[in-house]
Length: 282
Image: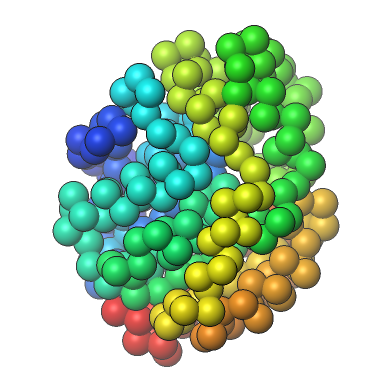
């Protein structure tokens, strides 16, 4: 199933409306993308899993979203974790395997800490963890102010900046049209307040706090980590996460960078399918 042609639905949540796509049947996978991108990050991975899994892919208010949130909505990491939990409740999703990448993986860690009740398992690809917060994210914390938001919006429209960021995140070649779409959507005035709220709340204190709960998470965890991501999320973060959870398995994906769902959708889908089958998580 191609996510780009799947019908989009909308659910109203406390923070505002969230658009999502729901395809396939079987064990439920909920895909959580990171900042400045949208659910299309998972397109190639979902295409390989939808025949045997229910794949729920929300368009979270992390910058590249169509529907602005309500004024004053809490879009810091804890607020985003609460939004994901409310989304699961609104759709009555049970025995959910959360699948997170980049900032979305950090949000998933907070869901584990704050709202584990509906979870059957957790899958993390390259993401923030503990006190590790990559240097790429720090300049964009300028976006927490109005002036900073305008600066970030201008930067994101510049194609050399887009190419430089994508060079860290994915291996060439990649879908340049999709990358431009992500960055230009993040710069739109109608969602700029949401972008400021998200970027202004980023930081390691939330992942450090979430990590204190990992030893109590008694459901299986899968880490699918790209070995080519040497600048943002190095392998030592994955190894430390694997040691922190009671039941965790680490799969290394040679050469993949931060966006493992883009660089290695076959490997990620195969690892997730094996995980749900072998661990009987749902």
